[in-house]
Length: 352
Image (cartoon, rainbow, N blue to C red):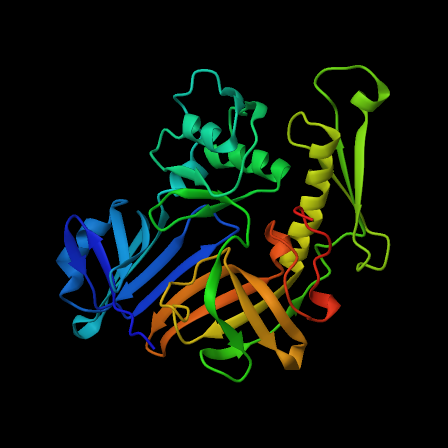
C-alpha cells in the first residue's frame, strides 16, 4: 500500500509531522472538511499563521486533498513542555454555505443553467462547474436571508442534482455514476479491513406527494399541481408531502417527487467499508460519485455501487479510509450491474 505523507501549506511554508489527520469528502456536502493534530514542539511558531482563518492547502504525496480555510485553531500546553495544536476547517465553498450574496443587484437570474446561476452569485471566487447536461431555469429568485448554497441547493433538488465539494475548493454540480474507480472491493480480500451494512426505516415513506402551483394560469391544473411517487418497500402507510422549489411543469414535479424518494433511499440503505488505503487499484484517491464493483457474499451484495462519502484518516493506528457505498440511482445514476439482494435496490432512477 502507498504510504501517505500529508503536508499542509500556509503562507508558502510546509508543515508536516501530524499525529492525526481526518479529511472528509461527500456527495452530500459542497465543502470538504478537515482536521489535524500535531504535538511536535517545532510546530509552535509556524502554526501561528493558522490562527486567524488562514488559507491553506492540504496535500498527500503531492495530490491535493483540500484547498480551504481554517475554521478553528486550538493549542494546549501541559507539564514538561507538552504541547498540542489542533486545527479544523473546510474547503473554500464554506463561504458560499455560510454567507448570503451581498453584491448581486436584484437576487434574480432568468433563463440560465444552474452553473451559470452559481457563477452570477459567486462573489467569493468559489468556482462552479458541471459534468452533466443542464437545462435553463426560467427564473431563480434568491431569498434575502439565504446563503449562496441554500439558493443553489434548492434549485438542484428540483432538477435531481447534487452539489459536491472539489479538492480545489470549488463545487461540482453532478449526478453519480459517470466515472469508475479501478478494481473491486471483495469480501475477504485486501484492501478491506472491515465492512457492514446499514438499513434504516426512519427517513423512508410509502408515498411522496410533490405539490406546486404555476406562476401563470388559473385553471385547476395550474393551481393544484400534484404528483405521487411510491416506495413499496416501506410496507405501511407513511406519507410525505414536498413542494417544488419555484415554478415548473408536471415533468419537473415528477422529477422532484422521484428525487425525494431516491435520496431517502440513499440515506436509509448503505454499505460502510473501511479500507487500508486512500487509493483505488490505479492509485487514484477515493472520489465520491464514482462507481465500483462491491462483492460481499455474506451480506448478499454483488453489484456496482457509488461512493457516497469517504473519510481519509491517519493516526497512531495507521492509515485507513472509511468509505460509504449506495445504489447509484439514489445519487442520480443508472441501474447498476449485478445481482444483489433486492433489499439494496433503490427502484426506478431518474435516468430510466
